[in-house]
Image 1 (tube, rainbow, N blue to C red):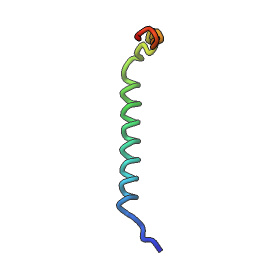
Image 2 (cartoon, rainbow, N blue to C red):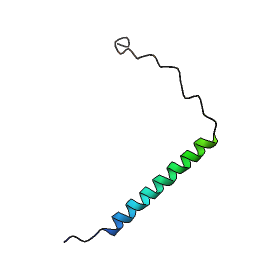
Image 3 (tube, rainbow, N blue to C red):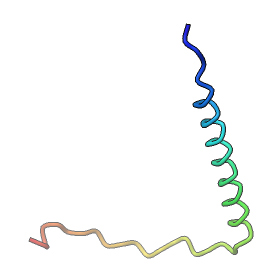
Image 4 (cartoon, rainbow, N blue to C red):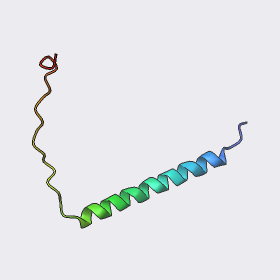
Length: 52
């Protein structure tokens, strides 16, 4: 029988905790800032044949 890898399990828990904390931080900072203008003017498509 394989023995449990406690170090791996601990690292996974720590990573999950860190990710959740970061998501909370981003959500908090996003809620405090006024919504930015998310719509940017569309970029014209790059014509690869014109550059040759």
